[in-house]
Image (cartoon, rainbow, N blue to C red; front, top):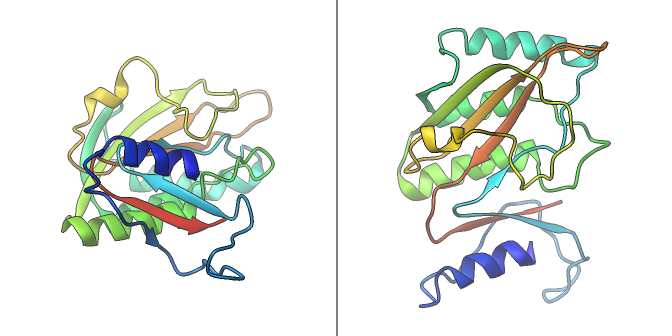
Length: 193
């Protein structure tokens, strides 16, 4: 959280950025004390993704639900979608809690989208879809899961949700692996871990 905030402040040395939007679940014991690691932050111009997604039988239903919602999307293309629909897609993804670095939080990501939309008066963002990906290895939650310049295929003036459908292999089910990209700007969203 501190590194994200420092990066955001460094990118705006004129001190135009001064605030952090704090969501409801933050309850420090005293005004100036927080437990280390109790606060996460999503900052402008950054990407976030789960370290790994679940691929067991529990994801079968959510994978099929996302498949239906994205049936009209061509592979390796993006479409504009309402923030509410983007939030519902994020809610259907299943991060592997055993691999979590506590950066990706699907509830916090979804709420950050809503806050961004309200603050920037945007009702939609972009959704990029790529299917049959051979993603297996764990990633850092700020590393990204895309390759080959795919992020550049999507404009950066709105929130972008990248959804990659992994292949079913070796006893693992197919699953959707999300990555969110926040546009550049002077904002950050903090949340309780």
